[in-house]
Length: 268
Image 1 (spheres, rainbow, N blue to C red):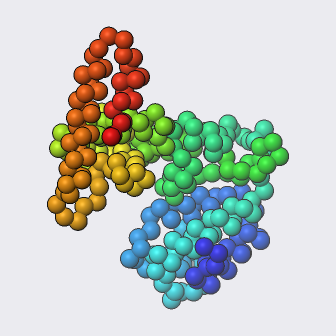
Image 2 (image 1 turned 90 degrees about the vertical axis):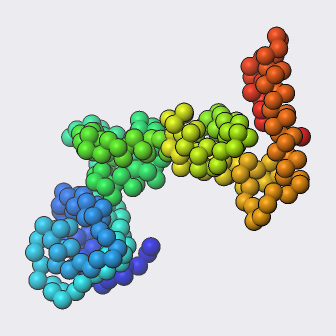
Image 3 (image 1 turned 30 degrees about the horizontal axis):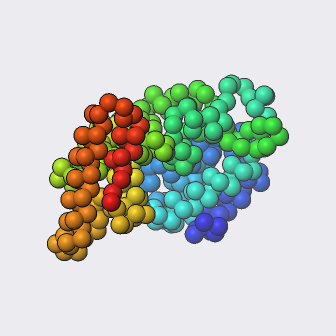
């Protein structure tokens, strides 16, 4: 994403980065982010409307220009990136109000930095700040709190889809193997595990599919093009037999819980 699709948007970007005061540029970035979140790829947008939404100025330029939504999304993303980089970073100690770094927002809401990038399109405004001499994005705490109050469902969904720990993945795979042997489909199993663990079905489904892709010989939900082969049937039977035996052994005195859990992952 290095070149503009529309010369008019390129010229607007160059004008703002060269001549607009820093405060105005910061405001324009926020306005462009808001507009970006409203765009529909199948619609066409008048350039003058776009210019007004971004700069709050009614331009007479390009009165006949209509920009396809997908092209405008591409160019507005470039506009945001280039204008933002042109704004001088303010040392975090000199910020007018408390500012959170990208890492702090990510940690507080248990989401990835990519998720925060998507939130910016939905209206989470950022500022260019300097921390320990290094320029980076900062998020005024008041803006973060306002965004969370207005987009609670979005924030909760992002947290549910955050990166899983190795321990969480182990639990998901153990439960998936048990439910699979009971006859559940991948979709059904993913939903049941998600409800039990408080995670999104998408995250659970991805974990299972990723395991199956990396360990095809032990796949719980293999991609099949026909009836189960004799080898696959035998594998399922042996896995079920082993699991029943492990559960039985787990009740014997002296077998530690950790050893019992590990047994569930063993397939002859």
